[in-house]
Image (cartoon, rainbow, N blue to C red; front, side, top):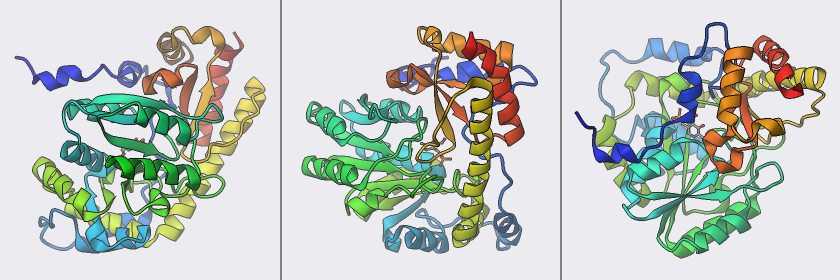
Amino acid sequence: MKPATRLSLLKPSPIRAITDGTPTGAIPLGLGEPTWDLPEVARKALLRAPGPCAYVPHAGLTELRQAVAAFHGAHLDEVLITAGSQGALFSLFQAWVNPGTQVLLPDPGFVAYPALARLAGAEPVPYRLSADRFRLDADELIRVLEATPDASAVILNLPSNPTGGGGGLGALKRVADACTARGVLLISDEVYRDLHFGLRAPSLRDATDGGVVTSSVSKGWGAPGLRVGWAVGDPAWLLPARTVHGYAVTGTATPAQWAALALIEHSDTVLAAARAAVQLRWEALAEALREELGHAVTPPDGTFYHFMPLPPSAQADPLAFCLRLRDEAKVVLIPGLAFGEGGRAHVRLSFAATPEQLREGVRRLAPFWKD
Ligand SMILES: Cc1ncc(COP(=O)(O)O)c(C=O)c1O
């Protein structure tokens, strides 16, 4: 048996290399998902979902689309509900990215971006983030765009997985103008936007009417398992993506869409509670890093990721170092290299874990940094 040739374009995932074979008792600081309970309003909505568990329109449950539209200051026809934001990204790429073209993506950046580009037959082209805290660097992105004549799409992720770095409104505007001038689809992945520390990062929608924003209830609203996400943008961008998404999955589960509606209707309280949970975890992590390692750290612009510098001796083979951490210290961290060459000197530590796990995890890691 031989799977379709397009699968051979995908590279083996270094994240799987770390997480497969995790020993029992290991502290999971690798995965990017909330460890706090699904908010009560969503639990209740799951129980209250109407009698027949019917299909909903391909664009999504109308009430949910209205709530997402209101949240983003958009019109109803500018919203497509998808199976997580991953469903939105996959559908947009399949709808708009032609084989033989190029997709610009952040380096370091979310591991799915290059895979989605390759599955669409395109070449992923990395652009570097700023040397100062891995923020969006508009000059650098535009330089790469100008050097890439067949670019079909550009993806932004603010605040960023894995770095937590954000970007300013001015930078967003410049990137949006450059993409509009070239007729290139600009996708802004804003799944972490509501998990901010200082001010909330600007949205692409604050910068332009063009482009598409993707997001989901997976991070800020604490419900990755519901698999509800969305794309917001000009209906002309969304309609072909809706066709792809319809054939791929028909639609995301109806009860999950009712639960997502309840979460979005209670955004004020749900998002504030999530930020408080993340703040508590950050404080536990920062204190542990200070006490165990003498590291003085500042919080990221957003997300629940600390992009932690590796000891210099570990930079030649970060995967081997993280495997040692996994098997000897029994702490799972993801090498920054998994997110691109620009992450070689760092590891991603997810502080979505509980404060106890964070304290114990750092205590176990400390000898490996000191050595
Ligand atoms: C940057 C980023 N975008 C998108 C996703 C996909 O999440 P979901 O499909 O649950 O919305 C993730 C998941 O970790 C992510 O980190």
